[in-house]
Image (tube, rainbow, N blue to C red):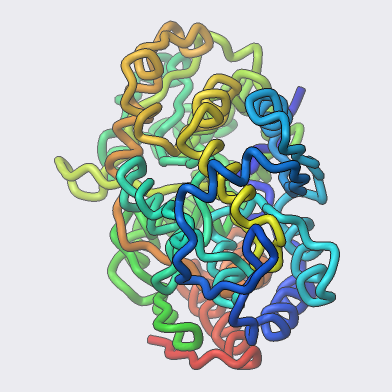
Length: 459
């Protein structure tokens, strides 16, 4: 069975109309200054609701609606309802990624039909949070959970001084490579990006039908690479002031590395997640992937014939001896500001994020966000038969701890990603250079942001 991972879903091009719908809904809800608590009364985001109200809420007959799409979520609901039988969780798959976000924003704008809880990928969190659509969980004492996550992951659910969600899963970047292919061509497993580029040339020269990787242009991959290089192309101050800078040093590191690979024809021109892509991973014509830690499960289910051939190594370093990674994918869960069951919803989030649910998710294939799970010897020490008996979680846990803090996305990243194919993506078809494409991406994103009422600075 071919599986589309949650981390990749909303990063495909969805068209400018999606961004416009989201922006309109944001404007419509941005004036909201209060939200109903579990009892239905109004409370400011920074209110004084006690953490003890979470436990009390779980003992009251309550029905929560949760919009989410991950296969593991069914197991979470079953286990939660068994532990807290007075709370029923109505799990609704309203679509994945961008499809759900559009429906969610439409419901928010209409003032009815929104769920109590929504699964939201990290890159889309600011777009909902800055519009006032998400409840501040600080009022329920959940800021005390910060110590159970890495700084980078916690940053992803903290927007403008508010805790607007709790992490469910993550995607620290690592190198998944076909050991059989690497051994065949005597390729050293690259520890630096310079070595990776050298391997790309050596492999393709030895067999023009084989490539070190496939890439037809993906905004999520590009931003993750820039992040790992120490880049900060996006910055938001308050709710309206946004800076976009595709000339920053980290971005230029990525351009210097990736441009020669594109122009030199060293990357397979096969789009990810399709039948051809899986075939390439199976027959060795695509020899590696630099992607999120969730890929282990996707390889095992999508490329079963690759069992024993694949291994995992740390993400190549930009500077030798300096480990620095980033996130690629992963999602949080947030309580909607309009929910009338905020306390019960917040308690459910905590159970998923740091309670029994965190281990259930990890056991069923989600890549964990909780450092309790990530650092456990039982999780790290599991040998993976698909990966030749390698305990890949040791590599991935270390990758998680090496994610650079301080990254931020645009408050209209969903829209920005939707225009990537027509801007930066043109570099992959030979119609533009990568540098010129990123500049076009910046300019069109900035123009859109200005139209939506943001104060945009470009550099």
